Image 1 (cartoon, rainbow, N blue to C red):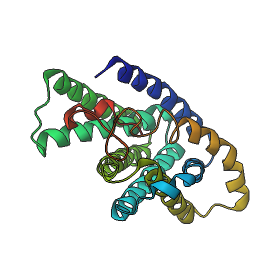
Image 2: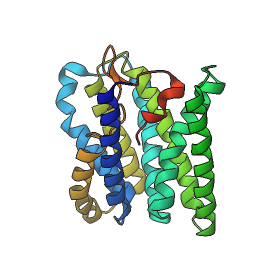
Image 3: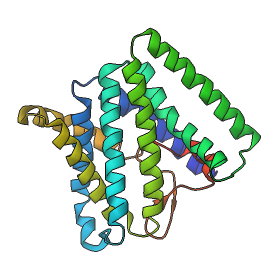
Length: 240
């Protein structure tokens, strides 16, 4: 991986941890993160004029559903558990699933370093799950694991879709649909929605719309950004 990509991953990691810490301190994290997605989707609406994802509506709906699951589960994990348990489990489950999936399903043999990394990651996740059980945060642990599954789902869907269409218009529609789905399910009162707007904009800039966004460390494909390298090397590329 080029040095520039490594540095971008490191910067993304710091920014990502920052906005997740901010999100965890808020009273209604699902609504705030949905608002952040909504703001980014609206900001990208002009791209639809020349970048509409007309070729991939099925992928759009699948990604929107996966991202709605991710937002709902992440918010639930943060509401019910401590950041030190929920965040690393949610963040670590996705690369573990990608690495193991590439190994078992796609017959991509991991390097020795990758195999050691997956073993260390597995041990760390098990320790954190045990800590969550002792803290009576079992539901938060479950929601964090489901967050990881959602992350893998939308990342793989998006990686395929942006090979077939423009990335900005696709991203706009996915973020609008997924955020509206979460808001419809949560049905926040107008006052709560207004109070989530400020933090939602900040998190939208730092998270889904900024350096912490999925695909920020990928390479440019036919229509947009995609992950670089093989699947079993993907753990370094997946952000929430």
